[in-house]
Amino acid sequence: MSSTTMDGIAGTGDTVSGDPAHRPLKLDDPATVTSVAGLIASHDAGAGHARLREEWGDLAPVELEPGARAWLVTEYRTIVAMARDQFPLTTTTGAWSGHEHRTPSPESALLRPLAAADRPTVEQVDGSVHGRLRAPLDEVLGVIDDADVARTTRLRCDELIDGFAATGVADLVREYVAQVPHLTLGAVLGFDAGTAQQVFEAATRRAAERDAASAVHEVSFLLSGQTVARRPDGTPTPAGRLARHAAYESTAEAALSLLSLTATAALGLRAWLAQTLYLSLTDEQFARRLAGGRLGTDEALDEVLWTASPVSTLAPRIAIEDFLLDGKLVQRGDAVLLAVGAVGSDPSIRGENPWDGSGSRAHLTFGVGAHACPAPHLARLIVRTAAETLHRRLTPQLALTVDELRWAPDFRFRLLETLPVVFRPEQHPPPFVP
Image 1 (cartoon, rainbow, N blue to C red):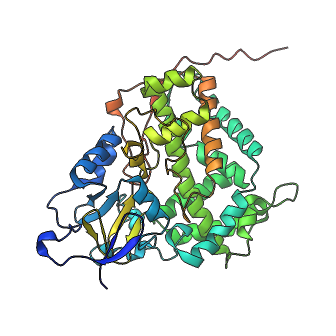
Image 2 (cartoon, rainbow, N blue to C red):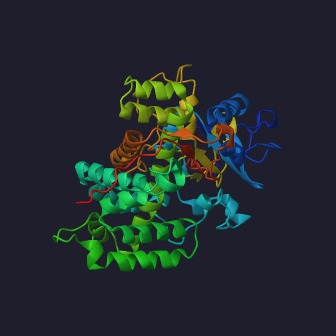
Image 3 (cartoon, rainbow, N blue to C red):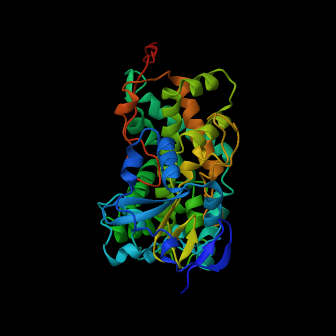
């Protein structure tokens, strides 16, 4: 197969030059490249992306682990074009050439998203199969009542805050942020608290490829039960509607979609809420503007997506044929990471002031094209309600320096490991005794 050159939006069909003096850069050519682990550990991700642009342009070779590299795309227009299938890429991770040399271990956090799946999820397939698996998610999530989501989220968040409000100290990640997704989204899908915990734990096991088959079996069994399928009044739950959707060929396929949805949603919600709280604790300008009312909560959430993006990259893509881009030859089997977290520092669309474009929702956090997030409005509603509820109840201050905070080794989501805070304890009146 001959290589073709792409102009950044669509292929021109030109043949790559065979002149050795003008041969484009291949992924393994540089002796050393930036490690993704280093980018994750950096407290200023924007500065890291700026350095990559200065050295490599808009397409940079990076190292996931020793011997395993990927291309990192940091330019807005190219990310959009790739996400809209205007380049020869697939989300099927089994096409990654790295499988010829290694099998990603469940313990390898940075290679796990490139593992070849025996049962691909909706994120890992393209074309008609993707359309068939995506349809139930769009239909069911699209009719969930927003008022019910807000009410449920507020109730669950108040219950979580009740657990530590009187102490004056908390780790907001462990005691609040990490708990919000399964308590809120689980209830929205129609699960009681125990079942929601069971489903999210199964999703975590499967995402880590730890006993993945048993996770699918466990959730298949839950979905086939009356408790999960219907509410007490007899109406079907959203989870029940998913399980019985005609597009799925089996309950196991429905279970796999639910596991994929909950795993991704849990990480996305956790990352967005944590980054929102982190920014409110560490960025005085953000805190002042928010407290002063110059930004509404939704506009503030958009600024989080620009300046402290909770999503670092979209689901990895794999090249299915060679193509030329920005003086580099992307070869068949190369992994390509669409760094939507770099968009906020892309000089082609953002000004020098980090607050330029307040209110804009062109940040690409939710993706674009066929694989875009199926329910960004639900994610926004949950995060907005959770952030508002916490700040209504407490006025926390960071208990560590910014340099002491750490992010989890995940190239898709910007996940704070801890967020310890101190605050004035809530004083509850003594119980009334008649």
